[in-house]
Length: 111
View 1: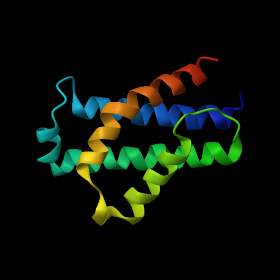
View 2: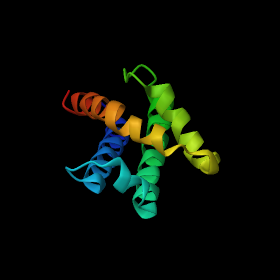
View 3: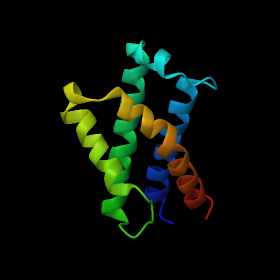
View 4: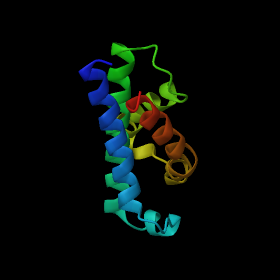
């Protein structure tokens, strides 16, 4: 795999791991909701994930990542629609989709 592709995959994984680190083992939506700095940090990591995914898609569109287009769309929403971010939706993505993305990216990096 090309170095540039690996760089984007690594950037995605690093952002996922950062989100996990920010939230800690005791993931609590109320803590997330009431901590503006935490929410902004998580949103920034989603921006990085989406931008890296967008660049990866342009470079190697054949790479199979299950929610590729949704991830890129979320990046656009976080950046351009910052005033319309639904914290409940972001939390749902963290809980349901981030673990799947992490597994897919780790598998691609381990090829």
